[in-house]
Amino acid sequence: MARDNSPMESIDKALLALDCLSNAGDGRPLGSLAASMGLKKNSLHRTLSALRYRGYVIQDPETGNYQLGPTLLRLADNYLSENRLRMVFHPILKDLSAELNELCHLGVLDGIDIVCVDRVESVQAIRVWTAIGQRSAAMTSALGRAIVAYLHKDFDTFSARFCNPIPRRTAHTHTDPFDVWTEVQATYRRGYAIEHQEGHEGVSCVAFPVLRKEFPILAISVTAPYERMSAARISEIVAKVRELVTPRLPIGLTLPERRNSPAQPGRVNATRSKAKAPNQGEPAPLKLR
Image 1 (cartoon, helix red, strand yellow):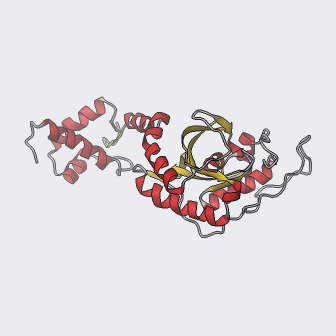
Image 2: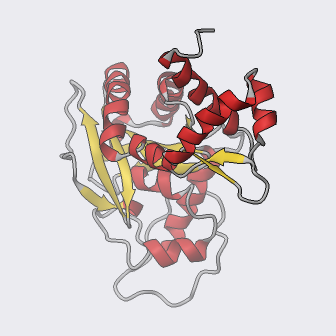
């Protein structure tokens, strides 16, 4: 270890203290923390005082235990900001697009809309136009459903937010809340969303949410012509996304775990009302090729 007057040692000591406190739950007293780090209490106390001054740690006034402070939340929020995410994920999106030779998107949820924050085109032509910053109804896209499937676990809270009403973007768009909820449930079970011609005629999409402790922060999608998006192609895309994206995610971010249940829409956990919304009609059942 470097000498006590080394500025590098001081920085390292502070980082190690934060790392130890990150696993401490309700915090740790000075003596226990110093012993685990192999440091003298007076030396560590000076480090913790500096961290506390800047809000990186706090001290419980009753127990005296040290805990992580609110400044770290601000750093985490900045790290996961839209601009930062685009910078981190663009190389991943670029390689995924090159490997699959398909159009790939990165999207975040904003209210009831999905916002495209990045896109990478393939050499294959596709009849769809999207732009960075473009917004669309979340429930009409695989990107939106991939995120929402990990936000809402019951029909009432889901429908209160997203079904007032769901816009019909194409002749294939499912606007009935119960049908869309069925697909949201299926998305959660299989770990990714599938959408056929609901956002654009002749276009299909497969999307994965990226999670931070089971909370979705964004979604990655692969878009292709409907006639090319067979069941076999979907399986190939799913395998390639897991292979290429998972090992390159920043620490703390994950894709949903594989699930053993079949990728079929499940039963709706809500009672369908007999009353229909005006001019809404009965959409055809969701079909996965």
